[in-house]
Length: 314
Image 1: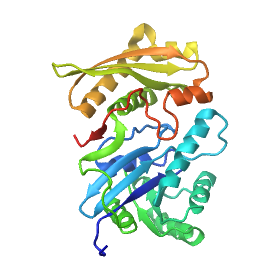
Image 2: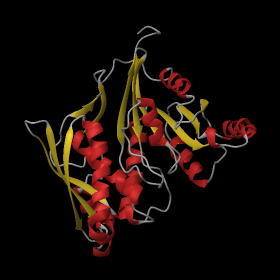
Image 3: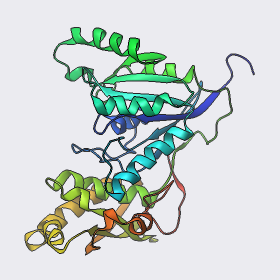
Image 4: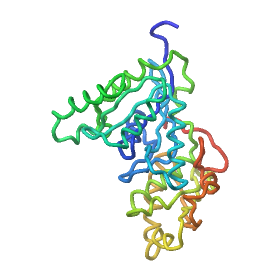
């Protein structure tokens, strides 16, 4: 192949929880693919986001944040999803918060260091760092003590520094023809993305630890001739008391969750949606391997019973 041949490869976005990996993926795609929220562990799955441009195709792998002390089955599942993406990757981008490097960041680097592939450091949230003079010494220290090939300063939220990061990635990917059509954005089905939109509202609207006791299962998904899509989904919780909290007094909380989720789903699907939600109890589902498999928490698992087509560029 010539030096200017098309490049294509898998790129894992790794980092401790809540450093902005999903925000970075969405910014790279210019599309809301991976759900985001203020709470750690919002991302629970390995999610493929496809960026195609004349120079090549980047297959981004968004991952749950790697964390230590994974005692529950759910936490172990999150770590497995992140490590699976690392095994697939031909290049790794470690995302860190500007001016902040702790033991969890070091643990992520320890996992990355075991793999022979290019490693880039993305210093995110530079816009939130009050003292910008800290950036250069911070990056220099990490460059001296860790084997990063390149450092990029970015603000995923504002879309700053992404062109340089994209160029640095493409320059290091293998010379290869694209693996996906130019209009494809992910290999995940619409049903999976719908379930994630509902779970995003749970993460945004429920307080404290309750969002971590919830998951969403899409039970029905059908398009009517009049252009309306009918969707039925179950919000699973772990205890009976949690069911009442999700529903709220007079059903107000569940109605608010459903209304907000319906609007985001209509934007995703570009059509009218009738969304029905139920709340059910499955005791201790997040610490039960069989339940996790049922709800799609596994290698490449999709939160649906019948796989559908991948979502294309709307």
